[in-house]
Length: 427
Image (cartoon, rainbow, N blue to C red):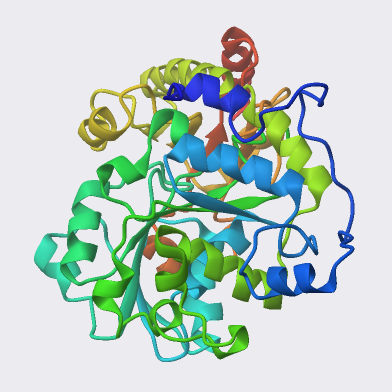
């Protein structure tokens, strides 16, 4: 029996086991296509009756090795890499939704995802109801409709740093016969594995902590294999009825626990093509190998910075789950006992201009449209990532005008604190 590796070992070893004389790193298979000597053999690949590679838009050895590593880290049966985190969230939902369907989503999610669900999917005929994750069960229950196909939330919200009660959301979703999708980008599988709390599908922006070095943009969809699609066959015809574009193939029957993942590749990646380049996947894998080390340092540094900000009289408020007085501290202890993430949301006493002056005064921390990098970086969501939202939408998404998103890096924490201190002295 093969030994089950722990997360730190999976970061280094999962997804690629070199044979005698093979490279220790998964090679970059930078090829669009793959040659076969027999026409019938390729026909079997196109009919999904045989596994193998024929075109990189659908499958590539480098991409698959990295996807398998992330699936192992999350405890899933299968995973698919995408060209961005936004593509991952779109594919995860669109794989089981079509025109006329409805989704329920937490309003505490990344602004780009909020816009994807609330605006872009609506143009495709898919409606979304946003719910306050702090609302009671009865209020959230009212959001479900007969045509609801999925529920969505983020383990730790971006940028508000609020912790989702995954177990409760899973219970609510399953009581209505729909799966729960959780974006686990900020926590990473090092600090939380949503499948263990009832989630069915996990997404990631691999651009963030998984890469960790601002080298590639990517995403990933991981399936637990646990949702009983066939028990709700009428609700999910895409998985449980014949696909005429594949000679009447029924994914849930033909591929069992891999039905959702196979359909995502065979249909969505085939038709929409949001595939990462093998080079990007290679770079992502380099980041994954140190994920367990970097996440630990991010959390240790962020805890000290959050404590410093909480004690400074010029700071109006701090939201970081690691602080004992934080309203999400109990949920963090339940779901994130090893630490939450390196991102802190806080506000300064003053107005929007105060926040801007603070950020402009930072010398080491960078103002960038990014987060979860090895480097400390900062952003003002109301002015940057969420500027497409109205004031009312900002409030619905939990974004205050003074909210500053500080992504604490892995530099020496005393240097980070020195930079924050001198910037505060300038406001």
